[in-house]
Length: 134
Image 1 (cartoon, rainbow, N blue to C red):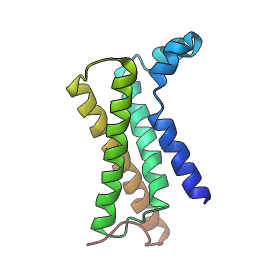
Image 2 (image 1 turned 45 degrees about the horizontal axis):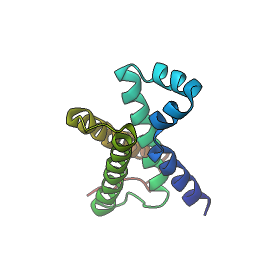
Image 3 (image 1 turned 90 degrees about the vertical axis):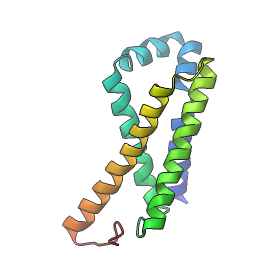
């Protein structure tokens, strides 16, 4: 139950349109836009958010087969698409496709980092509950 709580909490945090909150709360907006004004910080945050999402998802869906790994990638892709859609909608903007595609690629990269981390940890500790071998 606790794993699902953190998973749902994290997904809702990812989906919440922070830029919209920044428009409603100017103090938050100044900090938000200052932190995320640089492209590298935006990419770093997307990577972090989706790596943690991937880690939390593996508590629910064990990456023990190709099928389960594809399901994980599918879930992350869907969450990323919803997040990008909500971000565009809340900004009242038209999609800038290169930016959205870059974000989705970074989101997938975040999951890949989580899966590689789990695989490396399980290989190092000898607990082979990690990724599929076939």
